[in-house]
Amino acid sequence: MTEVRTPPVHTPMNQFPARGGELLVNGIPLSRIAARIGRTPFYVYDRSLLTSRVKQLRSALPAAIKLHYAMKANPMPALVCHMAGLVDGIDVASAGELMVALDAGANPQEVSFAGPGKTDAELRQAVAAGILINVESFREVPILAAAAQELGLPARVAVRVNPDFELKSSGMKMGGGPKQFGVDAEQVPELLAEIGRAGLAFEGFHLFAGSQNLKPESIVEAQQKSFALACKLAEHAPAPVKFLNLGGGFGIPYFPGEQPLDLTQIGTNLTDIVEQAKISLPQAEIVIELGRYFVGEAGLYVSKVIDKKVSRGQTYLVTDGGLHHHLSASGNFGQVIRKNYPAAIGNRMGAEGQENVSVVGPLCTPLDLLADRMSLSVAQPGDLVVIYQSGAYGASASPQGFLGHPEVIEVLV
Ligand SMILES: *Cc1c(COP(=O)(O)O)cnc(C)c1O
Image 1: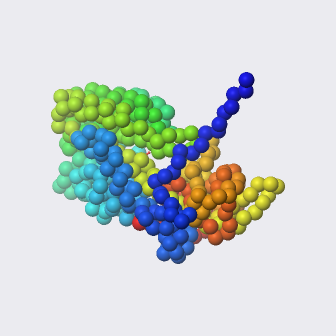
Image 2: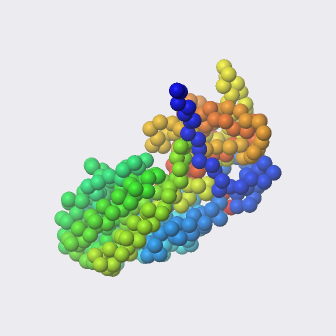
Image 3: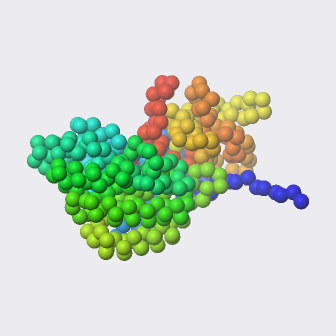
């Protein structure tokens, strides 16, 4: 008997409806958005999808859980502004991001700053802004103490812990083993003592184990272990824990065979943790911080077909967009094996004819591949190629200067 294996397919992208063959972004036909911008390529983000994603998460998680937006996923100022009105806080990773967050109206009390190489100037700016600084090195303690004294302000700090475990099945591991992030759990008691001696305003802990995880059971395990570790470390803290950031890591489906994350188990587990925290860390606000989960599915990258060529039997759609705008979709932002992001011809939705094509960009490198041998509606020059799941790690995570093509435009509709 021969086993019939169907190749894995992309999970259906139904967050953007279509009308008359056109994809709609917040109700507006794609070609009209293109006309209004006046040129391609562009990223378009849908406000209504951002809003509904936050609502959906709030209804799946206990009310006591605070939601922070990790703005490195998408730092577009208008989008950060929209997010600031929806979430409870913003996490920044540089003084540049801090500026955007404060401009967006984020309450400094609910902004936190993480990153392994904060400069003296950035630390001083953070103290002046009154935000919470996630201390990731012994080096930061005296710098913060000096800035606090000079400015006459408290230096609000949490300790970023490099845990003694990893987030299993995560796309990108950022905790456990040797890491440049945070301070190893075993060194944290000594760091807490120094924070106490330096007179910094200790507020809590930050644990971030990894990113892009689609397995609820591994997220649950990491959150349980993070909570247990925080409770243990709290015994060494110079002040009660007011703030416990359990990280995030919630993934979205990008590749064939991947399914959206089921939040049920995560919600149940966080309800448990909130209950336990009432006893063991009674003053603590529990935070999860998410980037791509909030914004990834709300964005499209749109480029125009410039040319259509056939090379030895393979059809190529050559577009005006490529890896210089969307490194992740080209497979060159942390992926081990290149796989296709979901894609479509945005002005020929539901068209009869399909054809197997590779979508490439204008750059003189074979890495500039947006879709490798995918079945798409038959397209012609002038048509709009859409890459889904492009709201996170797009424009700001791409080498825009590479090869001197125009910068990408970003719009929020
Ligand atoms: C990158 C990062 C995030 C966001 O990760 P996502 O996968 O986009 O949710 C959150 N916290 C920290 C500390 C990060 O470095």
